[in-house]
Length: 108
Length: 121
Image 1 (cartoon, rainbow over the protein chains, first blue to last red):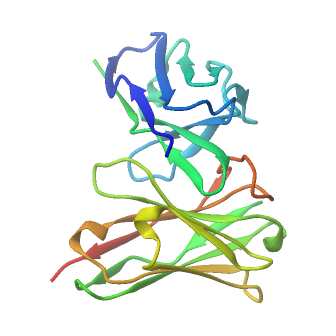
Image 2 (image 1 turned 45 degrees about the vertical axis):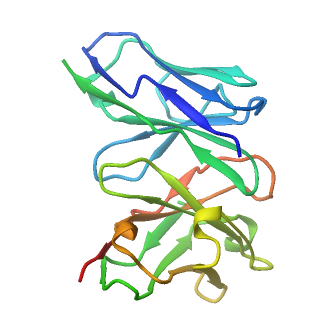
Image 3 (image 1 turned 90 degrees about the vertical axis):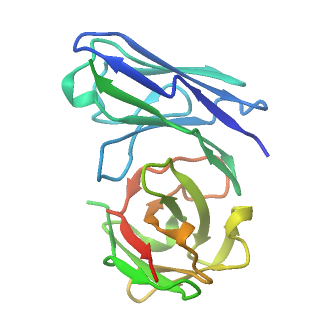
């Protein structure tokens, strides 16, 4: 099975920061990597699909890149409402769907 | 607009089963896979399984194979997830999510609100 890792597991941030989260796959998953944002008590929200495609309505300060085994998610100019946990997800075919362990952002 | 509405919170005893529903609206129910994901308290997201509504074919993560059943009711555009032989470790919030229209790559664009399940003696 393909394993997904994320780093860091948590990060203390300030408004205006540039935040970078990485996601690593144990095998090549081409560009089939999605990013979700989850706030406490809420369902996850899809932000980026296929490694770099920003979903409709998602602010342009969010971006993603990468392919193969190494992926990056970036928030430029972090806003207070971006405080959440972020998950990467491998979804290239059924039944091989796996989430990364998550990266929790909190305010300094 | 697309909506997935889940049934309410459940409290079950160890060894029992729980059945949660996910009712879809705002799109053609038969066109898209419905997935189930769970999240234990303070933990991450765990994919459980998926159903293809037209033919009720299913796929499951290894951890849930054998004690998870997914069914669909086309009359009400509802998918049911039944988890049996519950243990304390099954205490979690269970989400349904809409996947793509095929078995290839995809994403979870729409999610239900989540159903808390508590396993308690």
